[in-house]
Amino acid sequence: MIIPAVIAHGGAGPGPSRQANLELAIKKAADILISGGNALDAAVQACVILEDDPVFNAGTGSVMRTDGSILTDASIQTGDGKVGFVIAMEDTPNPILVAADLLDEEINGLTSHGARIWADNKGHVKRKVVGVAPKGQIGDPEMEITGDTVGVIARDSTGMIVVATSTGGCSFRPPGRVGDVPLPGSGFWAEDGLAVAATGIGEAITRALLSNKVYEKIKDSTYSMEESLNWGINELISSEHSVGLIALGPSGPGLGVSNTDMPWATWEQESSQ
Ligand code: GLY
Image (cartoon, rainbow, N blue to C red; front, side):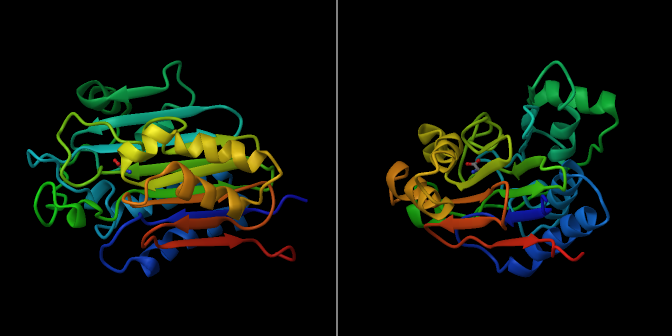
């Protein structure tokens, strides 16, 4: 019997306390799964809660780029091979909804102005995102590791697994910059009954193709999930970069590991429910 489960994180790096906020998203996903809903709905709706909460660097709480603009990224992938991602969207407080709308399209990803035009045609909410100004000075390494990104992985009773991630990007990045969140294999990877999501400095995550490499490590059953996540952080990422990972497999609850602060939580349905 496959037991529904969810795991979510609220971004690696320092920032305001956000564990309780994160648990609201876990509860939302759990409620959907308990009532027989699917992993796609659970992951997307939990991600929307995180995007709508200004305490997280995603959606409403996205951090400003160096020109003061707010540009949002999001991605989603299902264990049966569908993917959708959007990059640098203006006026889009819930980019995960646009990314999810791409899952059944011929195209996988859209960027910037074109992504917004496509979202307009599909009726997605267009609203100015005020966002959050980054603290500190450009180039100050202490200030670059602002907590960033949200991620959710859900598993339903059919064994379908879905990973959803969303971000406003790292602090002090220019408007055209692309981070890890919308890049398959970097910020996320889901295949069959296993998924991984990353958070932290996107350049380090992208150079390492971190989520896919850790996915492969877990698949190689020589290593436990905990060993594989720690391997990803310790061996593939330089210790100067703030990075975290979550993963959820075909059984058991999920696991989160980070080299810095990273709120995360997991839930698994009790078998009697
Ligand atoms: N991890 C989010 C970013 O680097 O954009």
